[in-house]
Image (cartoon, rainbow, N blue to C red):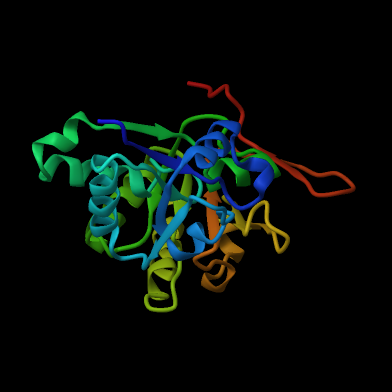
Length: 250
């Protein structure tokens, strides 16, 4: 088969954070497949067809991409951030596993990208500098009881935490529940970073203590970073640095 499929991360927003590897493969592609706002980030050019679709058709989108690759086309499936972090890489491989046997022999590669939690952490300093975990707060694809259990266990283990999809218009109560769970498990002074639209012109970063955090500080364009009990702030004249020491005493 002469076609191929690449699953690529476009980074958090700024073109400066798109990797050269992803830029190069987009220049070779005949087709780009993805969620509408992510496909809109890819420049149109002769010989390139853009296939934009809604956010809740990941498997259909993946099958379409695989079909085109099997026909000999050079296909790039795009995600924001990194395609392996709550994004399209898993959906493509799910489609491969359940699809025609021939799809397993396609030339498929995942191209990493800079995901929002790493871009946000870099802006603040190094809040994820020691052990951390990453939790998607959306209950679209898993039950809330599982999210709650993971939140509690992560807090009890004293991980720093990164939260994706914290608060949508259709389910604003989820992040309110999250803050309540954190207040039950963590001290009031626990540091929280709300990083909205990182690397884009409307970027906004806000550092708060758990006791002062409110649900309206987050939306679906926000990644929330919660420090461990060891996370610290270095105050200075400009924006403070937030970091988690690598050393943890016994």
